[in-house]
Amino acid sequence: MREAPPVLTEFHIGIDDTDSRLAGCTTYTAALLFQELVSQGFKPLDFPWLVRLNPNIPWKTRGNGALSLHLSMEDGRLEEVKKIAVAAVERTSDLNQRATDPAVVFLKGLISNSLREFSARALHDILSVREARQIAKDAGAEAHLLKGSRGLVGALASVGADLDHDHTFEIIAYRTHEYIRSVRKVSQNSVRLMNEMYQGSTFNNVDPETGRILICPHGPDPVLFGIRGENPVVLTEAFNQVDVGEPIERVMIFKTNQGTDAHLNCPRTVQALRPYQSAIIAGKVGDAPRRIRGGHVIFGTIDETGTIDCAAYSTTGDVRDIALQLIPGDSVAVSGGIRPRPLGELTLNIERLKVTRLVDAIRWENPPCSKCGARCESMGKGQGFRCRRCKLRFPRTIRIRKLDGRTIRLGEYLPPPRAHRHLTKPACRYGISLPRSPEKHNLATKQTLESLVLIPRAA
Image 1 (tube, one colour):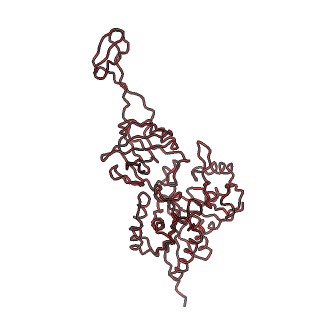
Image 2: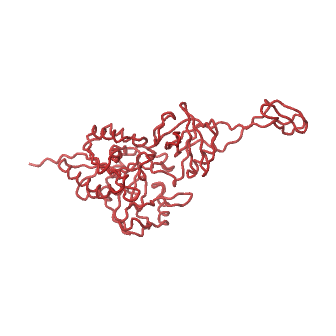
Image 3: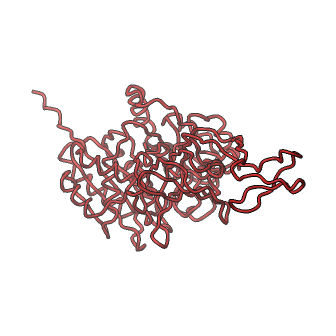
């Protein structure tokens, strides 16, 4: 008599805050753990997830990313996996840094609606540890905190993220330990050639205006470079076009919400804004744009509940230039992060600017003299006009109304790639049909998880 096949269950692992500004990277922790589990025979349900959360959080390390792994296994091996996971997090966490608060979350079975809602809010709001503890309890999740508790929010949110619809992938190469604090040896010419070969299927490799290479970070973390794109198989091909001059310890492909604008999906009113949220404000331009020191542009946006200053910084390129051309009365939808000012006022730092309606630009001119045709001069506020040559006088009401031509156009304006945040949706991704074809996604997932989990690569 045949034995019944073992009953498999879904098992989810969330990880956050293993890094600091001086060392480490939570993606590295997840890559190491994922590859260790796969090498021991555990079956992944998907790629590791790299979930970028609200980018305005003031205590984030760099890109506010949290990681989650999703597996299928027998109940009898759950404790084994937990021990492996906790050990991996302990081994790769920078616990000597005060701001580092690693957390590991374990969840068996399906993800609850309350957890999904919590994860969605973590994209654009500030969530408390207290709420995270309650959500974990309600969802049946088990949390391991290695020091403080702040990492619990991200670890939990990464498990409940929605990557079923719009998502991208990133392939990341990691450095060996002895190279971590040295200059990254990545051939810039090879990156430019790769970018030309894979335009449309990868994005934000090179800034088109400056030629600056964007795939390499600059800090002391273990990431050598990362390429983002639409398909994991194509990403692997692009990866192999990049020439490097140092050994690579490991490579991992992540499924991610990067490049999706996932944080900019929450319309709010001015009155409801709170510091460090991400928001979309729809309204009219109130105060005329003004240029301030550093080349930045500030203008006021009014909705039915109030007014907020919107800031287009010099690094935002077209966004700053378009903002300078707005006039009071134009209708806009402004997306970005909410920052507090010293006196308690708020500013919206623009990440995306949509111009939805333009008003006429009106210019009033002094009238010509009816006798000699010369342009009249004003006699002072409310006192009418006078022809200097003929001495004739005219009432104030005969000013001439002129329409100035405007070069600005309706549409959506984005900063250049060098100023993008991890979540910013690049122009090349606009118009991608969603949801994606399940057949194509499953095929790519099956191919890549089976053959590309551990990618051999020599320097």
